[in-house]
Length: 218
Image 1 (cartoon, rainbow, N blue to C red):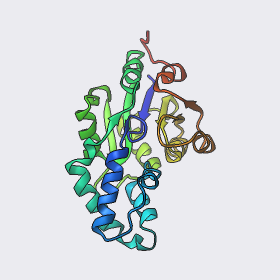
Image 2: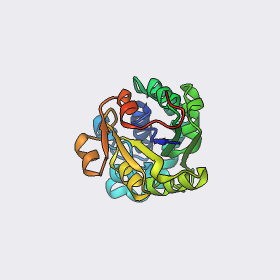
Image 3: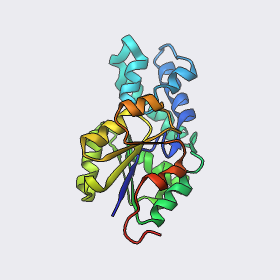
Image 4: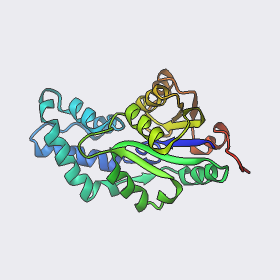
């Protein structure tokens, strides 16, 4: 069977509005300078602690406080300030119809990932959802993919990772998984290619052609 692991933010859904608003809230509450929305949005994708560390600059020692404030707002309303990318649900359904088993691996805390997928009616498409824990455990993509492969007993050689940032590609390569870049997300073609993407997709519909089908595919 072919397995396909999807990143969540920037690949399945666009979290931009909720991410920007929650980062702005956290920085404002800390009395720190709040960058322009476009600058904040540019840091979407990496683990939250990494993005906040960059945005806090000389105040990066306050990352734990900023994370708590971010989650305060994000958990209340930020996760709903989100949208499914056009064509993603159709692509996911097509892959399932071809016999692929679908999974999520996100540096976002698993509790939020499940909540988002349930809210948008996509949870049923995935065999399992894996994310970081609220204490920061498994926030690194390589560690998370290793954990997912082990827990789900997946063969790395029969597994693809679809993501929009360099850390998705690097995490896949570190585990012998085939990395596929999603160009509809936040990462550029150059970023994904330089990170080792084996294939690049302009639109979710292209996933059906790039990823081989599993047994019983039509």
